[in-house]
Amino acid sequence: MENKLIKALALNDHVRIYGVDCTKLVEDTRLQHDLWPTSCAALGRIEAVACMMASMLKNDDEKITININGNGPIGTCLVVASKNGDVKGFVGNNEICMQYNDSGKLAVGLAVGTDGYLSVTRNLGLKENFTGKVKLVSGEIGDDFAYYFSVSEQTPSIVSVGVLVDSDNSVKCAGGLLIQLMPDASEADIEACEALVKSLKPISNLLDSDLTIEQIVRSLFNDVEIVEESFVRWHCDCSKERFMAGISTLHEDEIQAMIAEDHGCEVKCEYCNKIYQFSEEELKSILEFKRSCLR
Image (cartoon, rainbow, N blue to C red; front, side, top):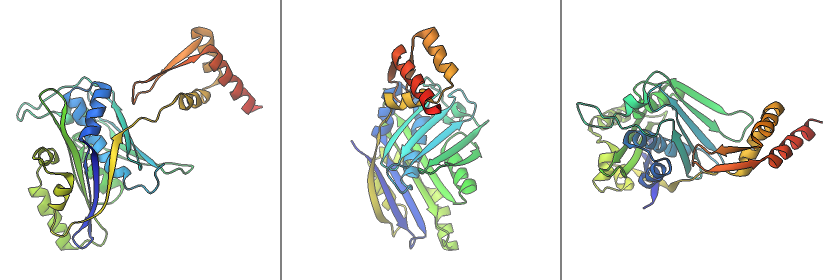
């Protein structure tokens, strides 16, 4: 099973479309973090949007970081996605299983909460990163990103994201659609998109009906033109060297305290749960290097 991302144009190039089937990516994330159903649905929805937003970047080494915290029981939701298709993420509480009483659907909005913000940071390899931030409107993720695009990027957008969790808690299907009006869109184009909103089925239901993401994208408008296809995957690029560089940014007193109290330290990657050990000798080496740079 591959995670496929589609880019397309429609309505005489007045509408751009991004679609992604990221079922395997979200299942890999679930297994990595032992996610319970609602935690999985929340993080998977964010990963779907992250895949599509990262595909808008220009260079493979560019990336976006999405941070959502609505002060709900799930805590912070953090996802990093690169232009090259690599995606990783985690949630503060992986053991959330909440359902809405009236529908029985996973209560992502209640788990995430609305008393907080959604922020998107673009790392373009420049001296300063660009960050857009908006208040959460529903915690359901799709509505929140539609609001983000409208307010932070002044781009009217339709955002549909979904994760269908099976009876054994595995991810049955997961994906997303992002449909955006271009600046030269006409009133007829706007009306066509408004009509689409009323008729569009949840993306998870469409994928569950055995439609491919390409078939789904082509079904949206009569003149859809696929302009690019690519793949995404769960991948963590952490390393001992990166954590070593992070430790070197700490104040000398903090590093000295690690040496004096613990004779070393243990660092855990929040994205993949891998643990890195730093011995007393390694910490002393980091401290000496830090001091030499300040001389």
